[in-house]
Length: 152
Image 1 (tube, rainbow, N blue to C red):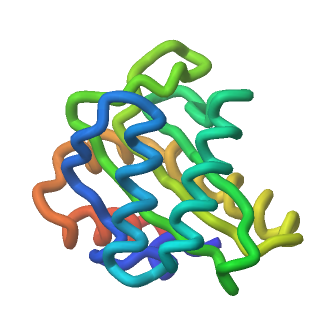
Image 2 (tube, one colour):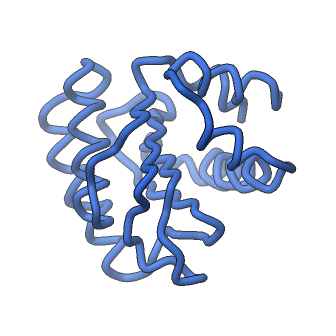
């Protein structure tokens, strides 16, 4: 999965205001609906399933990263949004550290192959040297997109 070509500047939230995983999920999914990428119905269903999943097991993978994700029959392709929190969000991550970067995505139903590829791409992206520091230092949505593009 090519993250740089999946995200646009509209799908970047450089200053999230959420403090909890539930609020972060709602903030990002509301943004997807607000910019016209998903419908109101998809928004409501996605929030419900994402929070339900988060209640069962955290998507905070450690090192300041969370990858909440779900499936929906209301999207035809992987729909993604990136949020950054300079303050940090409590996702009850596996390393117990706050999350600075949230990549939330919604996949079409029955798309398990793409699901695993997307998770793998995101995890690999964040293990690259200095990537988290660059993303924290970025000033604009364009700067953030350029960081994703540089890592292709």
